[in-house]
Length: 159
Image (tube, rainbow, N blue to C red; front, side):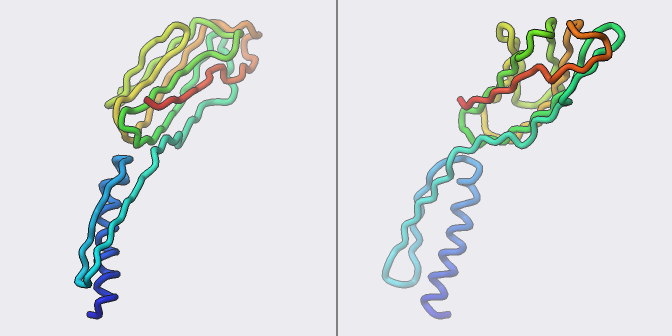
């Protein structure tokens, strides 16, 4: 094999080995490859911090039942390589609803806490998280059976 081909092969293998662990850690890593030629190659691969909301689905409108109560399910999928994790703050943006409660299906590594008149979902490590949230609201100020816009605002922050 020609020296140039060996250099390209070593480079391809080296990049593959360097990228795999760095992609999940969000860190920089320095690797030196010493091909059969007289030089050395230094590579610095920097994986930028990533915080991505892959899904935030919920009904656009809630309809109250005969008892006036409103409920809806929210599915939130977050992907993060942030070392210290992230928090999602859920808060009401509509004065037309009250008596709000949120329950979450168990998700490993995520905690749900009431925070004043809001709720916080937090994770303290990187990963992909799927959170299914059940929202329930007290009687609506609207006429029973009338539509109510989705009343919850979702904000996400990194730690």
